[in-house]
Image (cartoon, rainbow, N blue to C red; front, side):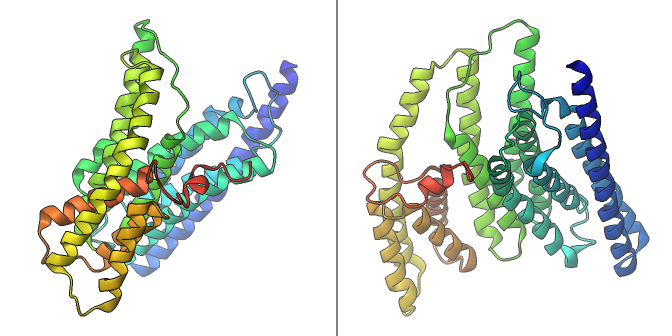
Length: 372
């Protein structure tokens, strides 16, 4: 049995070597492009950064190959499978994005490239699980790599966005949260302290996916930095609160029952309250800073406010308002009203509209595991 596992492990290692070599080939193509378009010094700087991150991605995969199985007692799969391959490609896209770190000014005309790479990584975050489930090869390896690369991407892409003035530096608190949380678990384990099991919470996956999507959009030169900087803080806070709540559960300071009650309170009171506040703030903004001669805005925004208030595709309505603020930021508005509206709309997008919603459109798709 052990001999068979060793043979399979050798096959998996060979597959990783091939993927790593293909990744190096892509990096060399990028190096050649920047040599021709700019200079070999800039190309070398990009190549070094991207290569270091790609090496880290390959190392993560190599060290966790024994997890390429359905469960702890199941046999190893004979190949990585399409789900894991797409996850590794996602890691490669993050590495290509990371090559542009600290080069925002010198390669300013090429900043659409890291935006494209990280957008592709965000899309693959949805597709890799679909591929794994459809091919019947869901693995512990895929789950572990998914978490690792999510965390890696939410360090590299925000650093790039901060350098471009698209995110506030405080967003790095979210980038560090996963690593601080893992360090805390390790410390408790070393000290022999109990680690209580976390209850199931689909919101964790939802929040992580929204963070990747938000940062990917923020990297593109489409939305006003006035919006993305404030929205970044708004998107960050629920995730930090989630890490804190999970930590309290792990430490035993918060019981699973209290954890569930907290989620119920949010669903029954906090999220419906956000809908009411959203409609009020949008009305105040329209009174304060919007051109009433614009018929689309004059009639469209009240319609969106009504839909969100009633919980009719409220997430979509809040997203429309965020997009409108990003494209036509009302600089003449009172900043408190604008900022509160951005926070409220962001939290509705992240959390949903809660109880008493007539049609929570999109919630099922957001929480669904594609391909299951």
